[in-house]
Image (tube, rainbow, N blue to C red):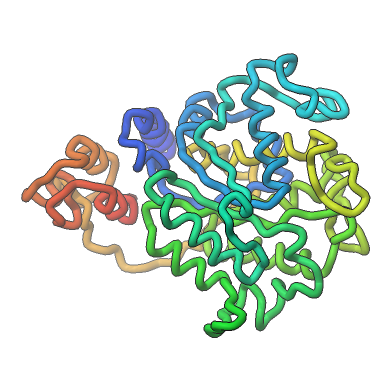
Length: 369
């Protein structure tokens, strides 16, 4: 019974989010670990319309190299009014094989793709993270969700992105000559913007860059996401599995499937539509979950966080004084959102800053039971 009531409560919140100030829409539901890979593509057809609406209202910025152009094209393909109205580039070699589904409800007008070149920034692997921070910082007020991807050009065996020490998942010492933006640098930036959502990606893959480095780096990324309850778009997993679930490899390591590219060495998704359509569907599955959709346990690869028994903290977001932090307190915060007040928690000013704002929402979210 409790689960049903909670489900109805968060369903209501997701609908109500459409009427909230846009800068808090992406925070409506409590954050939980989300991993979207090839097994989750089938969930695309199950996304309820209210979560499609909520997802497309989230303002998203993602940065990538040329494969990102293809992914962006895939998102646009889904947004046409019909399969017939979509251009041929969306249905190669044919609409059925491409898996194209087209409907204006899949509008991606709030999801903006940027190529590193268009931003005038470097994108070698050691500096990609710093370039991301440089690109995102002046745009923090424009978007709610941010992400970037490492290219298959970053994950060759000689690139070192997978190394411990020295790689992305190692806390590298400061180096003014050869600076490396590792996961510790990225987490420091993420923590400075708790009102924003940051998505991690595995790398893109190619036909012949199926290397130990890409294999280890992508597994490191997956393990990090599982262990730290992160949000992960596992593009490498999608690209290395054919639509029938068969794994594609090169030299014993995961590589992009031939169903997704006609290139003999690279990994662009333009010549064949199937790959970019599947990745676009995966992004919708991910964004719908950010908007509050819970496909249910046992149907996704979402990791379950380990429960740790800790002393129950004194509620700091208990607006009505009933000893609990729940949906009633949320509604009190919502009804006074963006107001100046001296009344403190009783009107949603949980941090007693004198204003009911996003920081108070974060206090409520952290204490919600």
